[in-house]
Amino acid sequence: MTWRIITVGKPAFSWAKEAADIYLKRLQNYTKVESIVIKDGPRRQVEEQVLAASEKSLRIILDERGKALRSVELARWVEARQMRGVKVASLIIGGADGHSEALRNAADEVWTLSSMTLQHEVAWVVLLEQVYRAHTILKGEPYHRE
Image (tube, rainbow, N blue to C red; front, side, top):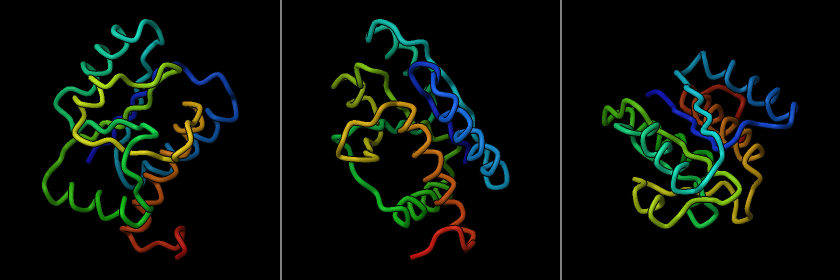
């Protein structure tokens, strides 16, 4: 399964870019990851671009109102989607304005990384780490300790 990570706004913090690059490099051993950055702007315009970028994929919105998954649950989710033949899963991180109800309704799933609102660069790094962790769990590697 290919992961398409869609973020609104370029990362401004060098530490976030460095951390993301570490996980993107690690993920190359397990899966394909595409990173798409949508320029921040008026919500309607941004959301149209997000929908276009995530077309023909399983859409997952990251939002504090979404479903919380434990790391092992995420791994099992990945395994189940791979078994079903899902080709592309788009993980969508919003900008400063978050996601509209209409965009959340257009998603196949809505997940949360935290019940707190996370700055999008923090969410980007946490998300990549969790996708990496899920793949190591599925491979039975020691990165994840229960």
